[in-house]
Image (tube, one colour):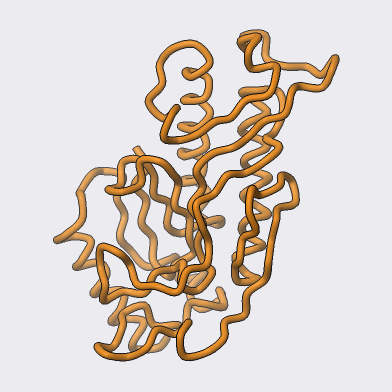
Length: 228
């Protein structure tokens, strides 16, 4: 294992322990040993050398354009090919979760961005996973009307048998009417994302500062979860 990677993990653990919010849901640890080194982007150092250019500035990254398989993305996602595979698995999870609540999966995924050559905003000595095309910020989902005659949960409000949109900033804390259904869907999705360690190593949501309106999902070579 690259010594720089070992140092990076140790430094990250210290940073998260000392500087970030602490709750029972926060984990700051390396990815599982059987996973380290197998993901193509793990070998890239996340701790930045003072004065050095970002990896995405020094060389052209291997990125692909992706618009979704099980649902369309509202704008093209520019991501690393390995991260694209995780997005495809994520879409399956979304459809499974949504179908239990609405009787169908979403028509469209709404996101706030993928590739962006930058540092972490709160920790400028660290490389953002967005810089590698290794992250996505999911803001919500759009649903088409239920197909005529298609089975839907009996408890589903009539308003949700037509077209609607679910957004974290509007529905994460909703408690009444259709909003309560959206809240239940988003909370279950957040919990399942935490449990599925094979999808994303970092899962951040409304409980993390600056994430009230989206799930941040990435495949960094360390694990952090803070959603609720």
